[in-house]
Length: 369
Image (cartoon, one colour):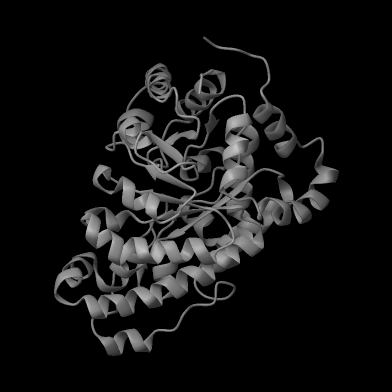
């Protein structure tokens, strides 16, 4: 049943994105990152419980380019263009938060990987420069304010945090995923068995890259970090614990901002290990059983996901999206720390009416925790 009485999150979000209060946004934008940046797990979970409804968080950076007539490539190469696209999405779709685009090639490119950047789809890595120890020693940890496209994302976060008084979410690559790009995914996977010592050296380098970049995003105004670690989905629980989880745990301990860990595919075998990293939340893709995962997470851990980005968002009409969204929401009754989202990044050609249908359905749905 749909209700139209404004909930606390509706009021907060309306204020946070309002054009009418633009004069307040600059001072708020300067102070909010410092206030929100110190929010801990329990504080954010309390906000989730007091929201009055489910919070909606689809990963819709790329399809937002339809609102501004820009290309995916232009957004990923210019922080101000990305900011303007996200600002348009936030105000047009009445989003509950603001966010950067998702791009897991940012760190690899800054570390020396050649990438391919299509005009209207996400870039991908072409070369893997680390084959031996001497290759690793030749690399240096990039400066997030000067190297590659890291400054593009730092600038976008800075502009978002000044314009909106909403939670700003910024993304980055996980250590094992970055190692897989530097070494090649197959080489990294084999190294977990036949060359764990060298893999550990690569992961230490990746951890330092992650730390510097994520800290720069936090200093620019990001209140929450979404860490993408899709490559680690291929690992067994013991291997994940050693070659991914242990490094993510160090990120959680050293980065001030709460971290949400995203993994693609079916990661039902890794739910407990994902929680053991100490992350604020786990973000799950469509193939993972959402309700089963929610029943296994650690206390005060958010579960985020997981409407299928291809089958549902891209392949269905708006009414189909509404139906599947309602089914997902109904399945998560009884779980207070749940955020409704797409399972992964949405395609740039996802119909905007489907994104609107998802958001409207989530906002009108009421549940009993």
